[in-house]
Image (cartoon, rainbow, N blue to C red; front, side, top):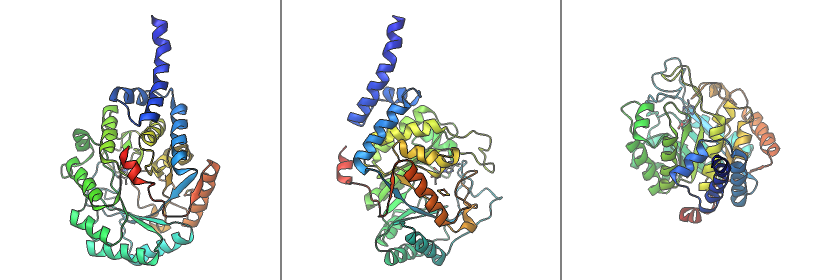
Length: 362
Ligand code: 5AD
Ligand code: FES
């Protein structure tokens, strides 16, 4: 009897990977099996890479990330630019500075610009709309992605009308109780979800996601995250390891694991074949070849930094963030080498989500 059980267990896991690849879904118990073991990581990665290649080929989509303000009115317990961190020097980029980053980025082959900032009320709807429409009129073949946190539906609509194409707003955790352990009382999962649904209804390509190994996170929380993603069906899914920051209340928590982050990338690729999934900067921070590993585990997007070198170190969401000393061009060439070395190719176009209609039917 004992021998039989030992023989059966590994077979079951293989079957689970086959089922996930075929049906793009699993029960909670099956997900638990995959999340709780590292036994089948290479099989998972191979299946995820095969699915990613069948949809996106060798293409890696690049986004030029412009971190335009590190002011934030929020106080998320995990984040280095939280309002309560008085040790950080704050900065804001002007419209002209942002446009000059785009100009440099365009010359380096970027056709998507991501404007990311803390929740900074200084940038009113009027200002943001003007920035978005300037970028769109100067670089007509480029997409604009916004990552400005929670705003009103009217604000999201105005920004969309000004030309914004995509919006990144990680849900962070889909469990109410866990959400309240990561955020102050002024913030709620309900409000976050409402923003995501509003963005989707307006017509944005929406990105959700969460950190792996954030304080108090359980495997059950991760399963809830996956279920929420299945409900929302976002075009983009951002997941990366939690990395601790000394100036936050979570200073003594440890970082999320590389292995679990990679395993989740693969599971998510298999569940969402058409999604745009970044090999995140956080992944590249916890391991020197983290982003290459991310690509091999199902990711198909990278977001190098286009912010002026003078402010890069100040946008420190977590410690030891990579690419903070390099000029945009250096970073772009470094990335090219890394992507090519990993067996993929950088694509010079907007890099929209493929065949969303089909993606939506899964
Ligand atoms: N470690 C890893 N990721 C973090 N983020 C914020 N703080 C950290 C951290 N300490 C992520 C959040 C946010 C995104 C912009 O960066 O998920 O949504
Ligand atoms: Fe930025 Fe290597 S990708 S320096």
